[in-house]
Image (cartoon, rainbow, N blue to C red):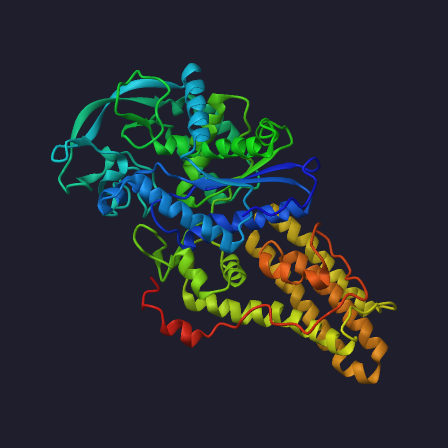
Length: 560
């Protein structure tokens, strides 16, 4: 769901917000939401309000082997799986208020065209070549096995259910041949190695350039930069970019003969570029994407989980260097993992609530708040249904929801149901407004550094300062003793609430809109005084308090 543009797209810095593409192979869980999608939306909403020209893109990854594995297991086609989960994702994003400029899929003709263009440019520039290699073959199924059709023990951490492309436990990328005791996911048999020919990306061509580029990155999260530099220091390995598949994007050349497709790890990252071009085409200016991909002042920020770091800090930048003329990532603020009672949230293993389950239990803004307050920015974060409910009740409801309700209620009762003029403010009144204004400046600085948890705390601290101001001035007593002073205090409190609303708006889009009747729309990152005389009706609470006993009574012991 894309918001209407808040600023003139001809002004401000072009900011590409590129968000990880979810596999359309199963429901996404709250770990995915906290890892990439919610942080990206918060960041994009703020960037729009400060006047930058945001293009936030992503889409469903429809060619991953998890899709074909699931289709085989259910006895349906991959397209059936894709249609089911793509529709679910779109519905989830809409319910959460994720403000995409373009959410698409890798199954479009546009994506295939852009992928084939990138392939041919890299081939023509000498960064792709053909090689014969050994690949696992399931003799019982009479077929070559793509990476995710193979499981085994990780050679790095001994995790027994590592996939042929990556270990989900330690996060290391793998080649199937590295697995200890490999087994076919189709028949369970031990596969054998047979020769096959594929195209390879010569990633080693970019070792020096990527090393130099990573050395210039400032402000990146330490775990992202250290991991990426470690990859380069170990020596970059060339990687096969085609597979023996019938589900995927066709090769633009027929050198390898039939039965080959471009593999998902190569083409999925191209989605950021193809989605930008799709948006430009649909906007009526097919060349508009260049402002975000070729502009000298453009920025690109990639929101992903830490298991995707090498694809976005090594492989995709290498492909961009090989293509030529396109901007490399400005920042890759990869989040750590969300765990549920110690187990990493995983759609494939059924650990953690799905997004849909979370939205059945909690209001959208309340869920957004609780996850944003627990974002795994620097370390893994453990979540539970109880912790989400506690944050909603003790923080969101008790601080922000209570503040809005008490101020609007007092204005409605004390000020004839309308925003009062606030002439004659004292130093105490001006101080609380200065605190809120300073918070807006701090939040901007924190969000620019993608410190979204800290920015949310700053906004909530500002709300707490307004509550403290009310407790100190006691307008409910002034209403009898000094009605004019009460009106000034309540007018000041309304102005302060208006500023806090701006600070929290990237996190709480629905309840931000719910306050428009009193405060008007937010179209810039600044506090705007409510217009005197604006009607203020008796408010209804912004958020419902969570009944923790009822909530926990309906949850399995493992929160799965």
